[in-house]
Image (cartoon, rainbow over all chains, first blue to last red):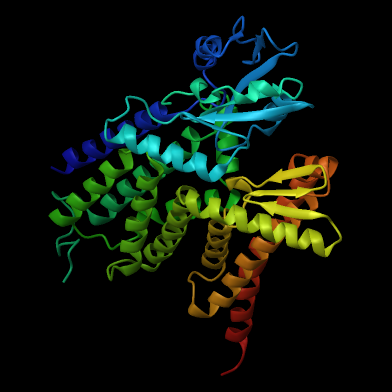
Length: 158
Length: 286
C-alpha cells in the first residue's frame, strides 16, 4: 500500500509535467492562422500573396493605391513593438477578436469576449478555445472607405 | 480530534510527513510547470527560456519555494498518515495535474491553509503554510484579470490627474491616457494592482526569514509596502506619458530596470523595518 501511494504520486508528477507541456502556447501566432486570413480578405475585396517571413500580410484593394498591413498580436499585450511596426504613420488601426472589430484595443470588451469564448469551448459549444492572438489591420488614412468594410470576418466565431 | 494522523509510527502505513513531502513536491512541479507554460518566449522549453521564466516569476517567488522545500521534510510530526490524509493528498495531487492556473492557486491555498490551521503542524510547517498561502495569493492575482482591467481605467484617471498637476494636457478615456499627440494604453500587466500580490509575498518571505512568523502588528507595514508599490507604478506611468522617448526609456530602457530595482527595494524595505522594530523591542528590558 505504501509503495502504491508512492507510485501514484510519481505518476501524478509525470502527468502534471505532460499536462504543462501540452498547455504551452506559442508567443508568435501560428503561421497557418495568419495564412487563413487570406481567404476572408479576398471576400472583402483585398488581394494578398500570403504572409511574409515576419508573419505580416500586405493586402491591396483595387480602389486604394496604398496597401493594408495585417498581422496578429497577443491579446494580453507584450508585443507592443510588433504592433507599432504594423501600424506606422497615417493609418487607422482595426483590432479584430472573436468576431468583433474595434477601433482601439479595448481590454474590457476583448477580455469578456475571450471569457465568453472560453466558456463556450468548456461547455462544448465551440470546438476550439479562445485564441490568444487578435488580428490587427492598419488601414491607410488615404482610403477612408476601407474602414466601412466588415473587418470582423477576419476573426473566427463571427 | 486528529483527522490526518494516527498514533502509529509509520511502518507499513505511509508517514504523514512523507505524504506532505510528496504533496509539496507535486505542487512545486505543477506551479513551475504553469509558470514555464505561460512564458512569452518563442520556444518556452529551451533551457535559456526556462531560466528566463523562473527569473520572470520573481526573486521572492523563487525564494519562497526554496524556503518551503527546505522545510518540507518536517512540516508535521512523524506519525502514520490516516486514510483521510491519504485521500486528501491524492485529491490535491489530482488537482495539481489540471493545467489551469486557478487549480494551482487552490492547491497552494489548501496546502498552506491546512498547515497554518493544523495543530499537528510544526513551527517549520506553519512557516511553510504562510509562504504557501502567499504563493496562492500570487497565483490567484494572475487570474483576477477583471479586477486589474478595472484598475487600469482607474490608473488612467489617476495618471491623467497627476499629469495635469504637473502642467500636462492629459485626459483619460477608459484605460487610455492621452497627452497631446501621445496616447498611453495601460494594459493589465502595467496596472498598479498587478504587483501587489508579489509585494505581499516579498513581505512574508523577508519576515519569515528574519523572524520566523508574521504578527498582527506587521499589518501597518504590509499596507505601507502595498501603498508604496501602487504609488511607484503611478509615478512610472506618469513619467511614460511625457512622450515617445520617455515611454521607451521607462518601458523598455534603463528606466524599466530602475523601476524594478526601486520596486524590489521598496518591497524588501518595509518587512525589514517591521522586523527591525520588533527585534529592537525584544532587546529592551522588561
